[in-house]
Length: 169
Image: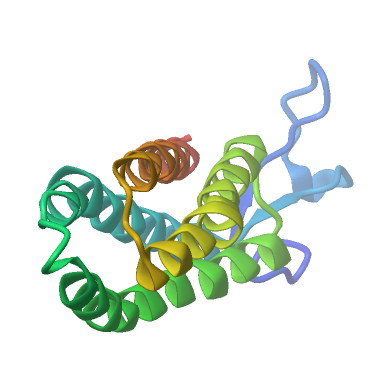
């Protein structure tokens, strides 16, 4: 508990030039470390997952020959869906917690970058996977999948980096 009864870490907000503590009548700034820490961990998990997909999973997937493509893509989609649900679910839940807790500027940046990765998934990657699943998986569609995924990965890594900055600030 802070001096005003708030729950969380209470940071002193002195009067300008007075050196007086926030309990002397100045407003206090309450920081909820739980929401920020949870989001930073979820963002790191998301970035690690996304880097793995970008560096290992998709390059191997797009190299599958046309004859084996439908089975390989179907297996990939089924196998990764559980991991996506867990990682994205954690990111959304902790992101909501952070919004309620009141993020700092870096926290907002982390939220926006992570949200951008989710939007790229919903608006670009998921429909592209749908087209690739229905076939044919042309070289142009496979290349587009790699490009879209790199954008998503960059957003996820930026989100994790900004979340780390917010935690350390």
